[in-house]
Length: 220
Image 1 (cartoon, rainbow, N blue to C red):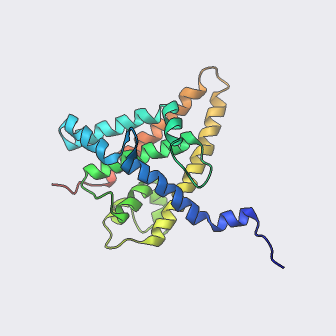
Image 2: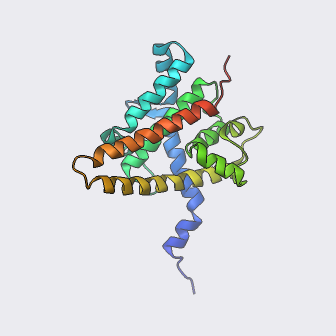
């Protein structure tokens, strides 16, 4: 007699596949752009042209994306442009695009090839943030920091799957944490929305500073 697998078990079994597909979709959008939304390389080139110097351009890119992260309506609209294999709140998907785009733009300015699969794994890993990466490395679950992965001799597909799972899970954790903060803030009139925007902006700024420290410049 044939038994139908439980949906929950099927989802668990497909977790690496689902996580990989979600992150690839978000990363592709962040790097290549879509419609009127320019990708990371275009954003980096435009900012470098206006600022005239690489580090000034990095500063500007971080602050641009902090501003985008705080625009909740923009995040929701941006996330709505994505077609994902699982249900993910549009504002959370939009925030992930903004943060990945910022990191990818910084990585591009620092002289890395964002089409290189090793670099893509590294910039996805940077989405975890400095503290989590350090803990994962110390526990032996990651081979090293993003810079080491970006400059590794070969692409590691197993590491790619692991990083995708971890970052995908981190998105869910952030969603739950932010929801709790906003729910508490909503008890105070007119505060809930600004608190959500400030939280997104703060974490985006922290990721930007981590990326600029981690991906040392390779272009002379």
